[in-house]
Amino acid sequence: MTHPAMLPLEELLKSCEESRTRRSGPGGQHRNKTETAVILKHTPTGITAEGSERRSQAENRDVALFRLRVNLAIEARSEVTNPVEPSELWRSRCRSGKIAVNPTHEDFPALLAEALDAVSAANFDLKPAAERLAVSTSQLLKFLKDEPRTLQFVNRERTQRGMHALH
Image 1 (cartoon, rainbow, N blue to C red):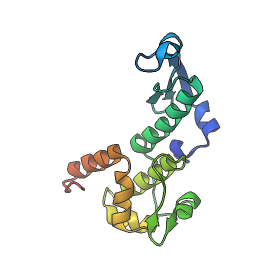
Image 2 (image 1 turned 90 degrees about the horizontal axis):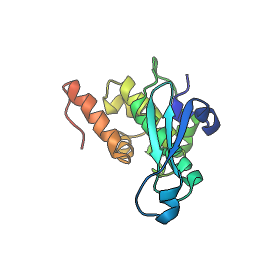
Image 3 (image 1 turned 135 degrees about the vertical axis):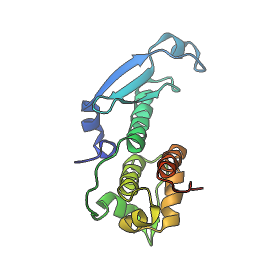
């Protein structure tokens, strides 16, 4: 089963409810008089995201969609029952044990979902997860730190298992 953060955008949108609303703040009358804020809710998981800082509804929809994919990557887990090879996307982003992707790039949520699924399958022990993903443990930790909520999630799970927090 494909992780929802890895789905093509059109396919992901088919499983979402979209609503529009007004938000206050900078942006002038246009922002305050029209429903430019976009809220997306992934129906199967109930995970939501919002984009409201732009004056354009289309731009806010793009922002909300990216945020939804990141939220799905962090909050939704896919079962990894047996160690499998990293995805083609993951391999295309790795060079000499290092993962290279900007946290604002469209590939980031899918890569984050794959990394977190591997970490979860390894019972939140980064070493076997990094080995499975063909990166160094320090590179995996650095990648997870690119989204601060990810490190919070991993540390919360590690603490529940009696493991020390990562820094």
